[in-house]
Amino acid sequence: MAKKGKLSEIFSMAQFGDNPMHYMVGYRDFKTTREISLPEFLKESNNFETIPITRIEFIKKKNKILYLKSKKRK
Image (cartoon, rainbow, N blue to C red; front, side, top):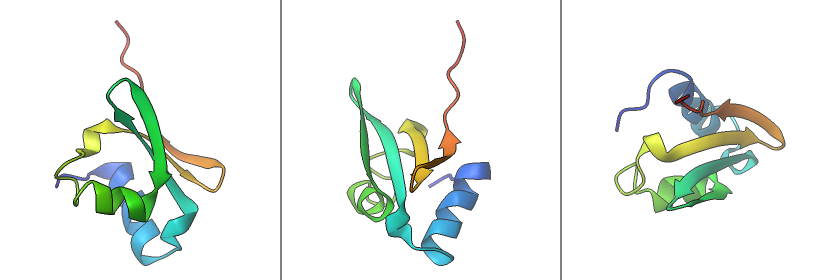
């Protein structure tokens, strides 16, 4: 599991310093983006084994976007 930088801070804050149910994670699931709660994501991803951290598109707390993956320009 290689969480670095801003994502690492968000996950740590959510799990240990706040209510994780307030956080929503959006990740790529084939051609769509799926949005689920942080605890559900951690359970479903099996601690980032089945869903790698690179597929995370955004993280929201309530309606505020905390992390948004930047799109690479071609």
